[in-house]
Image 1 (cartoon, rainbow, N blue to C red):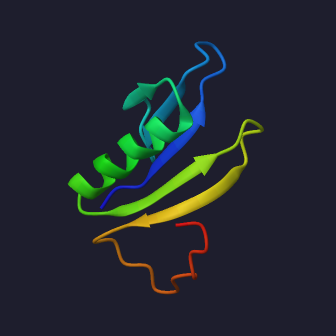
Image 2: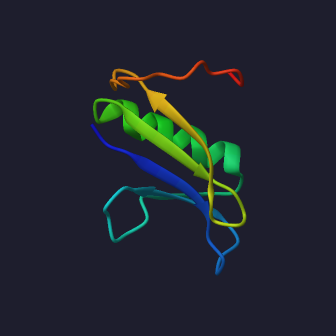
Amino acid sequence: MSNYHVSKDKDSGQWRVTKEGADRVSAFADTQGEAEHIAKQMSANSGGGEVRIHGLDGKIRDSDTVPPGHDPFPPKDRKH
């Protein structure tokens, strides 16, 4: 199970996908949606987990559980 973060890289202007606890970026994408898709695929391939999407201000604005990850208190997702 692996958690990933999607955030904007200030130097390159691209969106980056980073595995939680990693020192290096896992992937870059041109759009936030594309980066979110990549992060969800990577998380699913590693057994599920959380994908946390950061806004331009760096704060977490959304979080999605990727199956087969287990969320003990799953919120009702009204966006998807």
